Image (cartoon, rainbow, N blue to C red; front, side, top):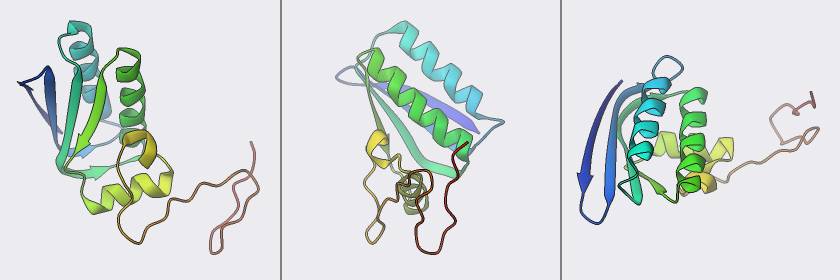
Length: 127
C-alpha cells in the first residue's frame, strides 16, 4: 500500500490510499491519521479509496476506528471514490452508516443479532 497526502482549501486534508489495505498495511494508515490529528490543523479528512485494490476486515476496522477517533477530535472523516465492491462490503458488514457510504443499488445492509438466521446464511452464535 502507498499513501499520498495533501492539504486542500477550507482546512481539508486528503489521504489517498493505493493498493491493498489489510492486516500488514493498516498500521501505516493508522500512523498517518494519528500524525495528522496530532498536528490538528484541519477540520475535514477525506480518505480517497479510488486506487484501493483490496480491503480486508482489518482495513475495514481501521477505517471505522479512524472515523470514530476523528469525530473525537472534532474532525469529519469522509470516504471518496469508494468502488462498488467495497461499498457492498461495507453494507454487508453493517458499517455503511458509520462510514457514510450509501449501499449500492440493490444491496440491503444485513444486520444480524446472535441467533438470528438470515435465509441462506448460518446463524451467528453468541460467544
